Length: 361
Ligand code: UD1
Image (spheres, rainbow, N blue to C red):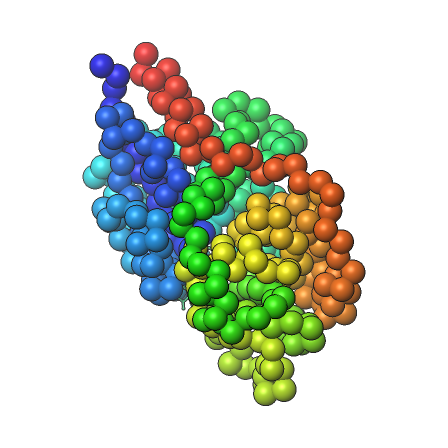
């Protein structure tokens, strides 16, 4: 009879929910006792609760309710509260995902308790320490025991930092669920809901570099307003706050401002869009997966494979560049599935079992 291990995964912000769903699907309940912790970093229904239903996630065992605070308070609060969970539950392993404040806090608390730590989405770098997520990436990878890396670029980044043991190329776990074609809503219904007859673009924008500099936001909105098709724009709460300071009266005819969408609605709208404009790493990858071109309205991306193959163009928040990219884009000939084959969850669980079995024996 093989040993049963206790695993804690922690989620907190929108991109975590899909990734943890893929992981949970891969955990055999005979071998794993799984506890799901929610930090409470995202608390809006549209950014959190709805995904529990969409991905049929189990109920959370603990909600740390850290909410919105300054970055350092958010991290500090999460460390203190997650530490109490670790003290009580004493898991064999903690798995953290991505690069959010929740992820960084949980990684620090876990290693201070000398518990095995695995990082999903390890090795990614944007090489700009003014980005809050970049600091988180560096902190988490500095203390992790197991690195689950989505891309070859990530492997190279870790090798360059001298991290060579327990580094595994798994592909991107966010893609695991995208192959569930049955889950996509009917596109005809979506088209009539958003009154879309022909071509349209989908836009998202929430990275701090764009929301904290109103001139960037204005360039992006002006570019969207000048596109020759409707633009669906699901607005993140952080962006909605920033937009309250901008006069939008002449800038909205073709833009549909909507609340953040559900995951499957978003996927279906990406699949049928002519082009996606985004500063979200998740949406860049999803557009690539669906073979839809994207314009990156950020200055860089960690998903270099997508840019190298020609599926994404980096323009930054620059109206002229965005419009040029939109009008001159040529669909690339090649699509190498360089973000993985949608089986990352299973692979990660197998690696964890082997690692923990070896540690016990
Ligand atoms: C966070 C992650 C980012 C991820 C994004 C997905 C960090 C540093 N950033 O960014 O990597 O791509 O989630 O959405 O962890 N707010 C609400 N309701 C909520 C959550 C946030 O109104 O449910 C508002 C608050 O005013 C808050 C602001 O949005 O201050 C920013 O929230 P925060 O969680 O700090 O960062 P995100 O921009 O969501």
